[in-house]
Amino acid sequence: MDKVQESKLFSQHSADEKWLKALRASSISEQDANNRKEAYTSLFSKYENLKEAYKMFSGVTEMPLLSNQYFNATVASFVRSFAGYLSIERDMAEPTALLWFDDVLGVVTPERMVLPNIGPENLNDIDSAVEYDNVSITTASWNITAAQKVVPGSLRGVIVDKNNVSYEIQDDGKGAIMAAPGVLTTGTIDYATGAMTFAVPAGSDVIGGKYSLKVIADVPGTPAYGNVANNQMNRFKLDMKNILVASEADMLIGESNLVAMAQANKSLNQNPMQVLGAKLVELYTKLINQKLAKGIVNTDNSTAHVIDATAWQTQFYDFTSRLNAFSAQLVEVDTELAKRSVKGVEATAYLCDTVSGNWFRQMRATGEFVEEKGSTYVNDLLGYYHGIPVLRHVDVPANTFYAIHKTAGGELAPLMFGQYLPLTWTPNIGSYSNPTQVANGKMHAA
Image (cartoon, rainbow, N blue to C red; front, side, top):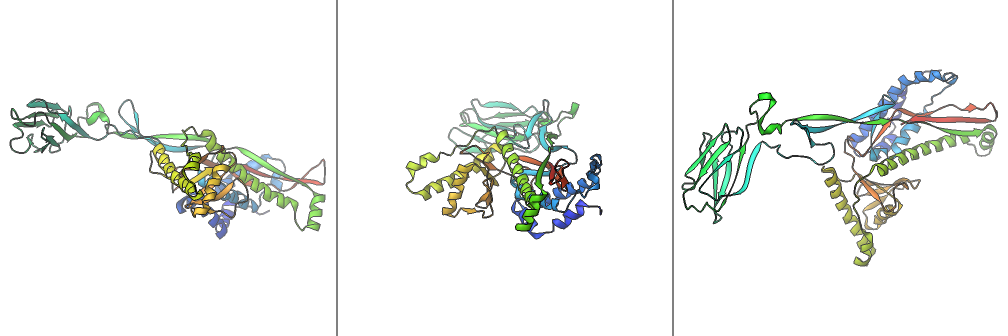
């Protein structure tokens, strides 16, 4: 028996133009499609090293366990499923794998989150500037202490008198604070301590006004014990975190009997086991879709953005206006998605139930929705709203849909889909208890 080289077979298979077209169609971008193809290549390459494990199964290694058809089964299932729209796809070197991501933390003790991978930023006190905004002037002289070393020549500000006349102020880099003639009688700055003094003539219109100014802290500061300017708030580090992903091994078994196979071959010129095998591949695709849909539904803990379609019944008399109102609400959905993720994002896919799916499909009347003619099942790709894929699944709660964002490069998505073993077809195996019966299996781990 010739040795099967999975990586070589996949390389040949992935050159098929129809398969490449399907891969691109189910990807966010060309870069995402290339990343997914690389993940599949790595999966099959690693699988070559895993076949030694089959030796523990008595009798299996004496059979032609692998067939070229399992490439069609595996990669067709991947590109026909929701995986490309909803998840990051990665090959797994072990049955369990870690998905790594980085958060940016401030070094100051206690450490604080500054730039999380997802979520609100904390930009407080990061800027090395020390600012004073609209401070009231109640006396002819006043002092300010920045309490840290500042950069010479960095002071910029404005004094607004009680008549709303503005005067710019700045330092000369040598310790003096300058303004228009007659505004200040005294203006000094100590660059080592950040102390500033101001004085205006008695009875000046500046008294009763306000000032605003900014100085730049000297970032290097004093290196004693690791302390720097601004209490270390301008020092950062990466915090590597991970999500543990475990693969689940499973097998789908197709059964038939030789008598039925002979009858079907004689009368219909078809092999029931081949037909059943194709159906098991379809079933595998639907299992992937179900797990992905449930993964989003079961982990969602956010507050829903409500679109009240009932109000449109009284607001609009024509159906097209109601569809336009729904389309306008999708703009607000994008805004809400960006606000909650604190990223400049918009929906790259919609996962909906049957009711909200009907709203998308009804927008065929306005030309905003193009239906996918290749859909073969209720849980499938419905079509495209302004080029954005709309996916329907019965496990999504009624009157609910999710706006999904996956980055163009596939680095960020709401789910991860790990692949450990490809969908592998076993040969037909007879039953000792009934010699007319045969069975084969579809093994996978993902």
